[in-house]
Image (cartoon, rainbow, N blue to C red; front, side, top):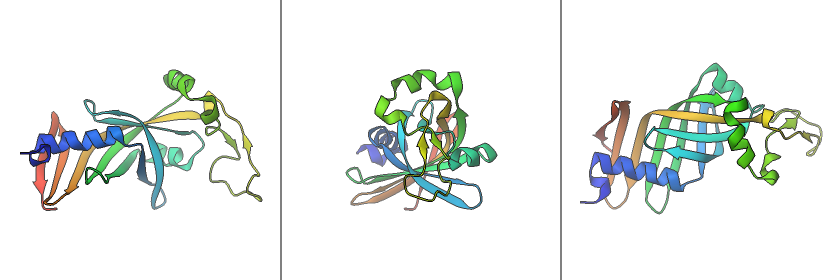
Length: 174
């Protein structure tokens, strides 16, 4: 029996591919569905949490302030596993993210802070100014409440896990 033949094994495989993965699709709903690619900066299976770094001025921060519900989608081609993680995001800023900010390479810090803010219409492609600084840096701490895993190997498998006291899983038809 392989890891994916048991509910605990498939769940462990899902967290494992998230730990190896970096770029995931991140979705939330504000004025309709909104999805973008983000980079996972932390994965803590034991807590059911993942972290995403972003600019405080991004539209996803405003949307998550209004409704913290979000979803993260990841596909690992080598493992043939799709992970859909449904979560609630907590926006961490200020002193809570200072240590993380200090670890961001100088060249990457320019991603956090732009005038006008990300998504604002501008006249020319470079009509914005970089204003990097820790005040523009936030961490989206996403705490999963549900995980939907699909394995598309020779025999397809699918399971859904709900957060209870730990994770309660059940098989679904793939």
